[in-house]
Length: 121
Image: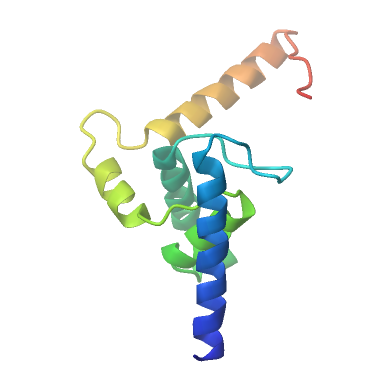
């Protein structure tokens, strides 16, 4: 087994461990974890990749997804299939990104009008 294969196997085992821990409904033991849907995660990852937010655009989607998955304790082994289903949407193909924009616009509008939300704990 080469060093590269060993690193990939180690990453896969860690991802599987995280996945099986999440199956029982428990939260990951990390400070920050993804609690949105798999489709939302993949849509965001592809959006960030296309905006060249990672490595000046010099990274492929698999590497970006793997890094984000590890960082946010949210393994997504079938992200190509998930992206394919996102592409098949008929109304809005970027539902999650549109929702993010709308919510951020609303927050800024509320702040402009003197409405401040409490800090989350």
